[in-house]
Length: 385
Image (cartoon, rainbow, N blue to C red; front, side, top):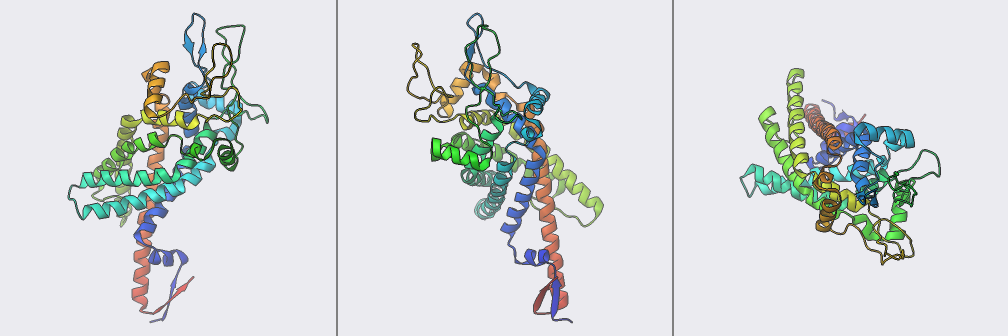
């Protein structure tokens, strides 16, 4: 027997890594993969959610309307492609990649640790999974909220592909009462770092935590999704989260099919039940905070004499935002972009969970193979190849 056991760097890592590192790495890879695949749909959804927050204008007959550039999935995609090109379809991809790394790393790590901790004290599996989901979701949300605010700002701004040309999100006076208002952007960020710098210098640190409360309310989403996913996956495959048996090709395909079905069903259920909070969160995140000395800006009120009233945010808090949207736009506004969201969220969840489960299976199989090498070699020294 040789005293030198040759292991690849990946095999050596699987031997050294803990289960928490497995979960964090697999979750990060899955999140990044889903972010890249579904970024264009995320942009479309965000624009549909945010456009109702533009300043309302009066139509002929005294009716109040809202400027609309984006209509439906296909119409919005065409508008973005025509005005912004391919870059517009992937606007905010940087924050997505930056955000999913810590989001899913924190989520899967905390989720599994919480589940292990709670399962030793409580026997109700579904309740344990639900509480673990909430704890993990709260941890990842607090850590990554600034990144998602930047992502939402970048995605919702309307920037033409022609350099220096922007849209006006506020109506201007027009001789024709029913004419569509022109659009001008309330902010312009050229990149992730540029957005972070401008937000910090002009609006302060609190701007990075805009929409945190509805984001935390969104924990109801994961509280529904992941316990349901674990329940369904166990029913379909006989295995819990993070475990897939891939001994044979036929068995592996059956396992992945079970993961696919469990993911789709759990995501549709969770998204349908909790979607309105996403609209509220988007409105709060895309609303710019007042800047001292700034003129007419989003959320500012104007007095009848034309003078600018003291700056006041249009959307302030979850309850007030809910009431404002309901009063101005009706209940349908809470489901703006839901069809697009389903077309984005379900594939995103499928890519995330299938990638996560596959990576976990690969990590565990590689660790097992490396352990067998060490045992068969009988040596004391590991050699990397």
